[in-house]
Image (cartoon, rainbow, N blue to C red):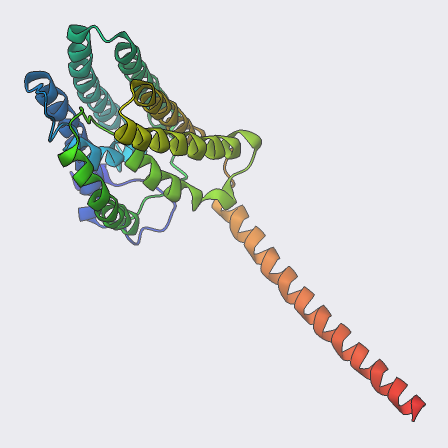
Length: 298
């Protein structure tokens, strides 16, 4: 059974032991389960003072974005896995939609409808590239990245948890922390980006995340509804850009192969060595000319 959950990648397999592979399968399911729990907790425990809603799913939501590289070799199982995650996410989103339908909050209804549509489109693209086209991800995740996400979450949540506990307005599932971690992870592969679209997508993504976080903190201090709406809208825009970046990485037109990257790095090193030798030779030549001038003057 475990051989079905091993990726047929050509990338180095160190840092991809059995525990890591099973973690990459289980963690997205746990993250979607926490999203459902938070959504229906908010549905059935809608109080005037909010001290919990959205905390667990905010911590784990980053792992839902890593589903693109889930290590399942069987294409049928992989398709079923993506459909299962889609159903879980849509179940949680429906919970939030029910809440806002009861409150007749049409702006949030439109926003969460956008989340539902985005989930369906992303799942279709993942099934198309991973199952039908047999594409492998270019953003490779190893165990060191997993531990890096966890360690950075500890630092960020040390700042955010007091905000969740002390805030008197509803604080639901937030993706901004996940976007911050993912941007740092995606930017490590920037040297392999090629083409205008994937590079511009990354820059616009970080700008949208910055606006989302800024308006979120302004709303926490000012408690004006316009900032809450702006934060939610830019969070959805950031999710669209993040998922677009994940889909674009499957195309060979947007990513340089590892072999070409190695060749390019080797050429740069050779060029740097040649430039250094040239500078040394030029320096020695100038020293000889200076010595001749000194002898001539004497």
